[in-house]
Length: 375
Image (tube, rainbow, N blue to C red):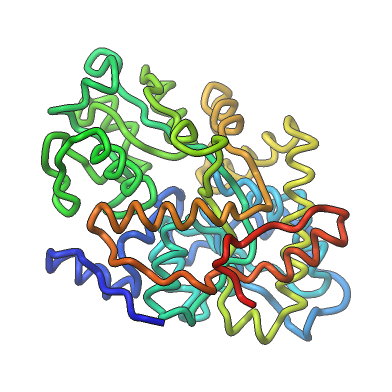
């Protein structure tokens, strides 16, 4: 595969790339804890019991403490559907703040499998020349909005001269905002964030404070940050799903290191069975699922989300086994257009064979890799 070269011009950005072993486009900065923090879901979930799959003692799984990672929060939490599928192979969960750290952990065998956003997946694959990871399932669609201070911004035509926050330079939401502004004719330097609209890269944990203080006028952010801003008096000016065909776009998918996939396919298949069963349970038990998600978030952050935040944050995210592969290619194109990525070769980024095997066993239709899969 042709190497993908970063187009980020600034030396600081290049140093960040080297440190993370991945471009900043990898980042979906949503969690409450940093890499290496041990998820309390491990204590709440059922204990490993029975035969060890592939003779493996443990499988290390990464995710973010965020409602767009609902599958992980529920499946690895008290419901424990993933551990049940793994039998005697113990789940060791790890919670991350951002995509680069999770990709770095995957590359260094700090984790084996992870829930993560589309941009980290794209760059993790590109930076490894197609050898580092595979996307093996979808997980969630939607859950991203542009929320603004209605006293300062009354319509999408009022963005000029305003400051809009995104989670981090080149992350999934940052790319989406840059692409949207470009399509509306606004000029913004992708690296500095300066231009007709100022793009302020701000950690999601800080964004509600910045919004309340008036240092940012709005934010293009995922859930539950978007609903937190609404609870602070913000207004949803644009739900990103309105920009996508049928209102669907990938926000979270499931990845695995290629080495682990090759060596432990039975473990990977078991995780996929647990993921599919978890998504079914979430869809069939929305109230109980919402509580399970909030219990997991409380365990991570020390306090649950209030109903005015939890309810819309849960409602705006759709769990799905379908990776929505065609939208991944579109998101990669947005990053190229924004000047944050050279055109990547994504051929082979998906390996949906085990997922489709699981779906068939569950009586479900197979999902498509949009021509980007392993043959």
